[in-house]
Image (tube, rainbow, N blue to C red; front, side):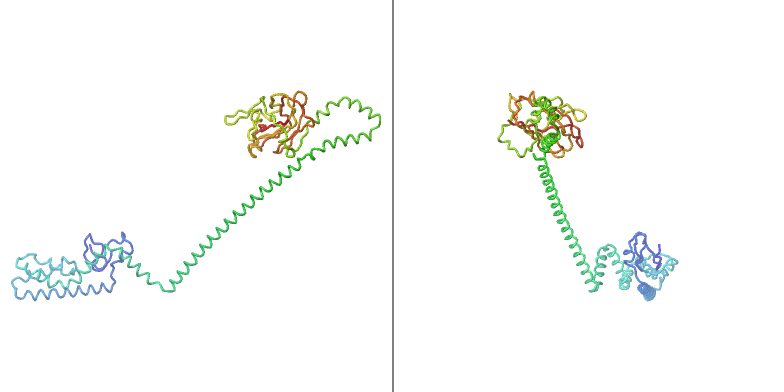
Length: 418
């Protein structure tokens, strides 16, 4: 195999041409490796000239040495041609001469070969050195890369170095500004959320205050005022005959009016219940109960003193006619009844479950009345102008407000005071 550039004979193990430095297999090498040992045309021309000089001097030496030995001129010329063969730098012109001549190897010439080799060594040392260097350089690719990087760095001018420094400073400042802006926006967002939370709770407190003011006693008095005003209007407009006609009606309904006056809704916050005795329940009975493994929804939950527990009916719809009965330990004079309607375990559950809108209350064997309630989460207090003597109290659903998710009507707590 010959080199495509200079025509030198190459072996199958060579990666580069020893004469011109051309890569033998460039398709399997990197670009840096291809040009690692490549010699310029000028260097190649000098190498070829040196080889021509060596080839010209070689026959002169052979003739000079063969003068005293005229017997065998051909054999003397052979060692001169054979010596450069292992060095791979001899020209191809000398090869055909050696092939044409016979190849007898005489023992007489063997001691002279080292002398010629020693004489020609200085001429070929310059050629053998690049071979050794090339072999070392083949295994020192990393050193060459480091040297190339070192050569590239000093090529930067001072202005380019300054520009690089300024770029790095600008980039670091920009990143610091971005970080500061992110922290500032995050803190501003947190403060804004805290302010919104305070406003939200303040609005809730204001709405609760408004509800308490609207549900005070004066808001419920207009019913009595209407009755008195209606009676006053009827009295001047009616004649004596009308009064006579109404007299028998008054005689027939004197017992019903005081019964209606017993049940009055009053504001529970204005009453000091510590002055009164709370009546305990001896037993409870219910006609409908929701079944659950985790919670007790029986009527006992409505008289246990815990607002988070509740009685719940288990019927389709609003549970009309369903309720429970509270039996006392004897006859007591009931003065107040406090009701916690709906599921008071949380505000969300209070909205999810149904609440009584109208209840049929029975206090003892005499007092029975239907009482309506607003759709609000608050304590409803029923007051009696005169205490009612009773041994039990019953509550049954007549109407209910639908829940946003479930239709189970709930009553969380019933408190009785004497």
